Length: 368
Image (cartoon, rainbow, N blue to C red; front, side, top):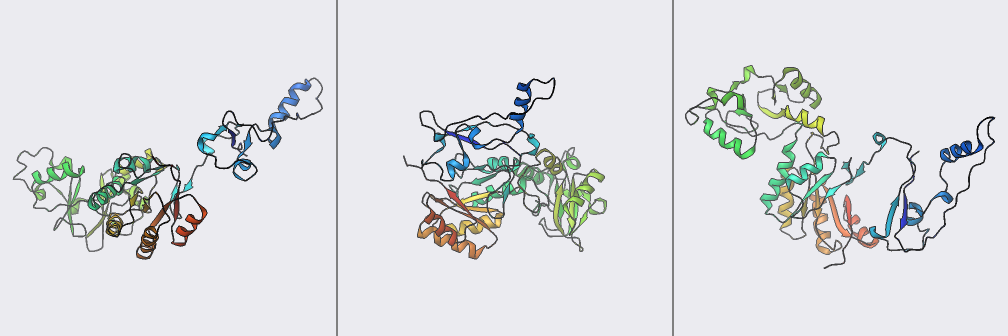
């Protein structure tokens, strides 16, 4: 049994309940001083309310205290006895109805806080980031796409290239997207017939890059190790381990490429065991939207980019405008996780719950 969380009012406030200490009395075995036996019994027995300094969490938040309107500055957490290891601590919490975080930390949708780099860092550590809305629709959707593509299980939309493209064009694509290996397809598009794979090592020492075509240096599909459509992610990872290749194309029965699995993701998975991932092994990310009619186009673009949750960013959540966009999102995208807010009263919360939200954003500042 773990230690109970204890809180106490800030300095200067009068405590509600005084602390007592009733020692446990025990007959001392022959040859053992009574004081040592009493001390051990006192240490081992469960803590009772009368033993606690300050107030219990139940007392503070359950109505036992006459105080109301407490804020973080009014409370200080007191340490208790620890009889468990760090490895036994679980902080897993719900972000929404269907999204669980192993580290319950969310970065704010502020333009000085969360874009794709912060969202990636948050998701790798078990939290989640909310991409701010102070961007064009296209730019915000691209931010979401950066997160979804960073740590991939099955890469569902890998960048492909045509066999006739020159290595100089390949260099430009590498600089733009940061990747080093690309599937080669008939028309350079995902879903087309796979012809081969080209990596950095295939083209590194070619001098005349403007005149050399990809097909001249790529590894043809006949020499590639591929996975078949429907393969489980664990099985794909095992093929990568055994074959020692960097990338594993996943193909349909007719030879079309349907996904890609990268070896680098194996290392990332080992380094970040708490990472917040979707069912395809991709990092999860949320994004903020407003309540204007134009934000419906923003929501559509974010969903197309793979966003996992949408946060309606409004200081006063209980408005007709928010009600309308919440109902629209849940009707248009039933699987999309939607967070409404901000709310601070029970009636506000009820109104948004009635609109179908999957979570509430709680809190309201005093203004500036």
